[in-house]
Image (cartoon, rainbow, N blue to C red; front, side, top):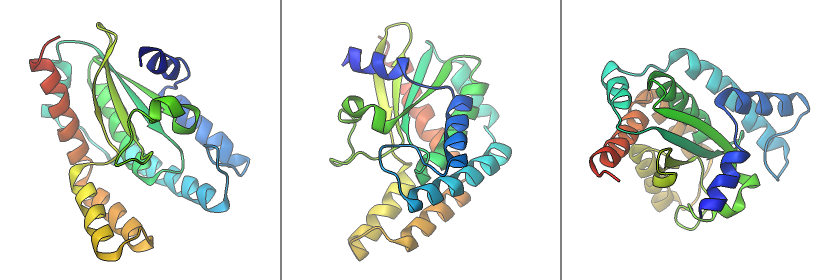
Length: 205
C-alpha cells in the first residue's frame, strides 16, 4: 500500500497545476481520464465555470482555520479526481482554501483517478470508483491516517434517497445535487474534514 500511495504522490499535482491541466485539455476539446466523449467534455466546461465561481465565493471560517492551524502534525491531502466530476468541482476549491489557511499544516495534492487504478481500488465506495476521494497522510509518520469522500453526508443522503425512489441517476438529481452544494456554501465539507482531522489529533500516533 505504501508504494501505491508513494507512486500517486509522485505523479500528483498542486491545485494550480491540476486546474491548468484541465483547462489546457479543454482547449483541445478533451476531458481528463481514459474515456473521452462530448458529454464528459461538456461537464468539464461546466465545472470550470463552477470552480472559477467558488474560488471567489467560498470562505473558510475563523473557527475552522484555527482548528487546522492547531493540528499536531503536518498532513497531505491526496485527492483522487477528474475534471469532469461535478462533486470534485464543488469540493476541490474548498480543500484548496482550507489548505491555504492551515499555516502549512495541510499540503493539498491532486492525482487523476484513471492514472491511479491501484490506489482507487483501495478506496471504493459501495464497490464503485466514486470521486473525489481524499486520502489523509501524516507527513511525519508517512502513513495513511484517514479517508473521506466522495461527497458530504447531506449530499450522500440526497443521492441515496433519489436512487431508492427513482432507481437511477438522472438529470434531475444532478441538478438537485448542485443546488444542495450551492445552499450548503461549503460548510459541510469543512466541518466533516475538520472532525476527521481532530480525531487524528486526539488519537495520537
